[in-house]
Image (cartoon, rainbow, N blue to C red):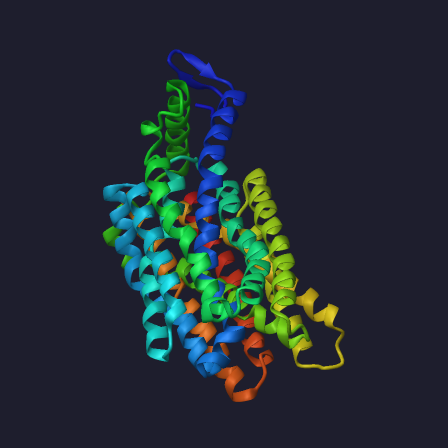
Length: 445
């Protein structure tokens, strides 16, 4: 049965009808989910901008910052799989409400940190509350979109993190500059408070706005719901036999290969996320506003890369080289950035261009990656598998920032850590090529 002629109540749905249905779904789901991801990203990474002031105010070392930035991912790791299993049981809107309100409150509480221990505890709790949001949305979108439409949907949703970078930099710089001293509080304290409140409000709104499954969507017509159901059934048949028992995941070497791929990619992504403000400052831009605007421009290009690469991957029906090419581009940019950071004679524009290349390449690979688990997993295995892959791989978010902090503290330079991360990112491309090749051999056997 062709996806172009789906029987709907005795008639055949045209391509235009299917496209119109998914256009309606995308306009309903993706903008709101994107807003939530923007808020999550702002509350997760505003620590990188707060660092520019709070380390001096609180007398924290670079190593304390690196550990605090990274310990977020320990909480993330421990609670992500249970969160996705809970999402399957109670639905997306209740899960998203719990997660969003929780991380917003923790973000606000960070304004009153005074000791490293308090800093570590709140960053850990931030990870606990945010755990499950990202993989939960990845799972949630599979309830609505067939495989051939997912990379574009993933890319559109995930580009919100880049959009957060676009608005987050100038916003953080502005808050830290203009609010400094208000009511006797530092600018970095106001940053946490002002950026945490919208998350709490959005979490409440999510419960009333979101729909758990297509069949429950009153904003779709009966025909629309039938189109979605048929498209997902066709996709299920086209994918063939896949692992559906989540209890087999932990002993499956292919799942661990995917974890290794994403771990290597996130080493680069986490390094850029938490150290871009520092890199920009070391390039000679000391004002928080300057740092914010430069970071914002870089993330705007990263957002474009995510959407374009995801769309092109869907259009061509190809995953391996869209992922590997983007990842290698990011690794080359990281190497160039490390080289320029180690040499005072290199023009600033060259260093910033290398940073942008690293960011665009790395971010463009992320939405394409999430097509790979769909090649292997379905049903309950997909729900747990996506969370397992994301939670274990996100330990890179703990290790990479902490290692960068240790290297920076011991050498006084960022460049040695960037060289190491570039090599790890290149390894992600190699492992992804191996994974897709094994999947194709299995299907052809």
